[in-house]
Length: 131
Image (cartoon, rainbow, N blue to C red; front, side):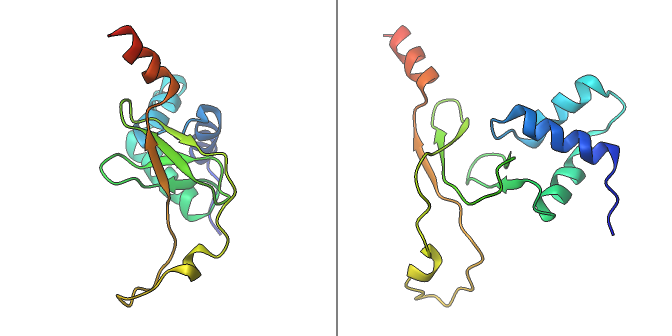
């Protein structure tokens, strides 16, 4: 049985409170600001353990740092191509998506992350100010 340490609880609370799909560095900064004795390595280990335990989800996007999500139910995301922030997409999950794949390469599929890309509202405003 794994211990639920204070550090793990603080890490989980930080992910939940940030609510914006933070990176490990952002979670560390949040926890470290109130608890300066907690190391970066401790936060990283606890993020990985929480993801393994299914308490949070690690959202991997090619080319950017892994983001952590307090919503563990399957859902889709969008990433702003300007600022890199990750947002939830409000749409129904495609049922049995893995079963719809034509497996021509012999993969043993274990899951997927669908990430749409675009420009967020804030970056669209900034683009308008630079014209």
